[in-house]
Amino acid sequence: MSFADALTREAAWLRADLAGDGLLPLLDTVGDLSGPFQTVEAYGRRLDQRGHQLFVCRDPYVERNAGNVWREGVHGIALMILWRQQSNASRAEIDQLALDEAIERVLDRVRGLPTDHTHGGRFFSVAEDAATVRPGKPMPRWGWDGLAG
Image (tube, helix red, strand yellow):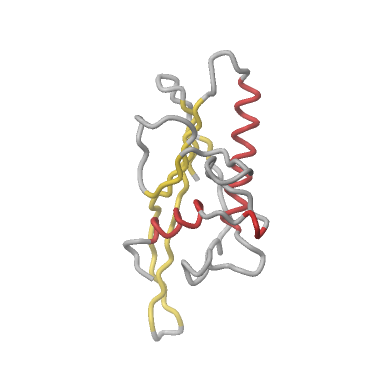
């Protein structure tokens, strides 16, 4: 499993339609169960895109010895949510509640299926460490609420 494509593999897992396995979709284009995000991609944000966005970003990568025989790579992956306020007329509480529900869906997807800790075979193991949610500061110029974690 390559260091170079880890973010792409994780983005593919987050985009996958796993509703049949009990994980709600994250993309809003997946069947009858609409997800909260218009974009789920690897790498950085694009301010020209509209709607709610989820990006898979690189965090620190660490190699550790595995039995003094070979090294195992531990990918640090951060997910960044850009959440656009739906309209000036909508109440902030409604937008924040929708963001909280979207975060819960993302956390469910990161935790994965009860019997699969590999994100569909994309990694040797996933989400071994506790997840952290760090709210960012809103960017009023663009109407975004940022979240990284």
